[in-house]
Length: 325
Image 1: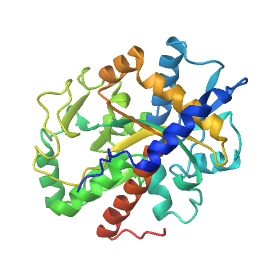
Image 2: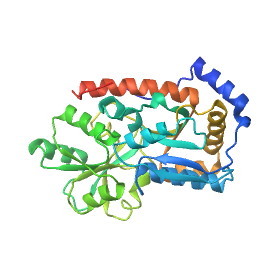
Image 3: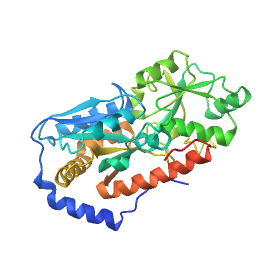
Image 4: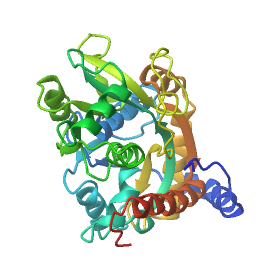
């Protein structure tokens, strides 16, 4: 099963045509808040600041865009904050896949992606399975064999228990019979520090969070969570190549608005981020960060959200995870 979704429905085409007609009817005149659910240095925070830096350099920002960190509850606090900003055309958010996963299992996550205004998807992000360089594990198989022989002796640094790395862990354990614990930390810096300090044994990390620790000799990559090997890691196998053919769970990143955002504002931001996605600065950033361009306009993103949510629900159910929606 795969969660890649590339079709462009008739509904999506109609949305694109309609938004194109009104894209010039709105333009922000004051500060635009860009809501992220991660703390400083976390994947969503780092991504957001890099995106805005590129857009500023490309002269695409008509006013100041400022990152607002709303940490806690996985993505729940950020999503609830967005819901409170209903009708605010000067607030946007940067979502990740956890925005679709959280509401499936958390009763208190009352705001869903369906409540928010889709604007555009921007990328699919691969990840790296890493250990510290003095770890005894040279391959993912060695780690998994050890976790089978001594269940729950080893541990993984992670973020939300509903994040992509947490689901991938569950899928691998289900497939292999291995068992290791998942320790959640609020920031990427804390997760990395736990691995480097020997407090946890393994981590699944986005290339944008790695911060040169692999090339600096402090982290070793065991496998890649990607459809193909990344250019910077030509000798490191993908999960499938390493012998673990599990369901593809892409980490999507993109832009949303609060409920009730005007059609004119939605069209403006969709056009803005489409232009950003085509800029040379953005293409350079994607190459440097080993990211996959995956721009989708609002209509196509709405279809993707429905498909992704449905398939994640199936995965969670197959893993005996209680689904509440």
